[in-house]
Length: 164
Image (cartoon, rainbow, N blue to C red; front, side, top):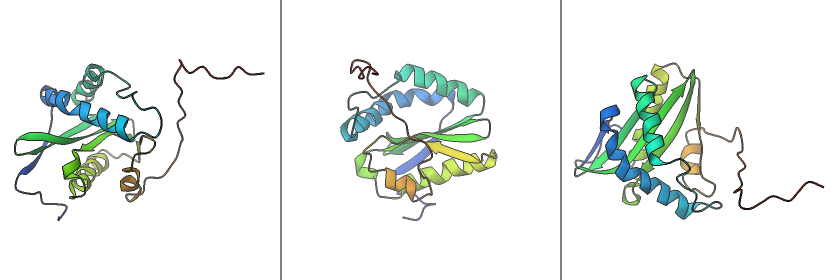
């Protein structure tokens, strides 16, 4: 598929703060996906409650520091992306497509739209986090993303060994 065209039954819409309620139906899909594919820490997603994520997103949109887009197929939400900005740094917070839509070029379209948003705001560095074990890591690497930091986590109920 040409990156500038969409299948006839697919539409991508940018959301404003008033339209974020649609994410309540599709954010859980991203969490379920992460819990299914995670090499470690299955069952911890979402880390933040959806209400808090949406509240932060509303604030970012009001301050013109975020782009949120939803992919619709036959009028139903089937994917979404969010990019946000803090100073001159960008962050890809979310990029998700239902399984049947992966590999059709829609992820590429969402990425290009995020990059255009970042470039227009003179962002010089874009970060994203990938759940350990996520096969989408290769998708991001083809755009030039590479490991800059490694995040280590632990569950507090799994107490670490005491230093000796």
